[in-house]
Image (tube, rainbow, N blue to C red):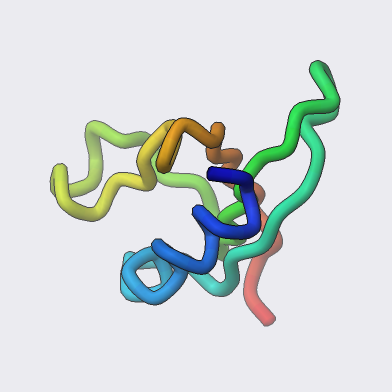
Length: 72
């Protein structure tokens, strides 16, 4: 499954998470690999979130990156 397909499959659930403002796809700055990008108002350490509110590190084998963008 590619990044766009994985994003489409999981986007509605990701958008329900606290602080999440958007979901997209992009390229990893280091490796150049396709990734799912989750935009958040601010990054919160995972130990300060409920387990079900943590953005996963990967979805359908596609890496996930969390990008803080602030309040809109």
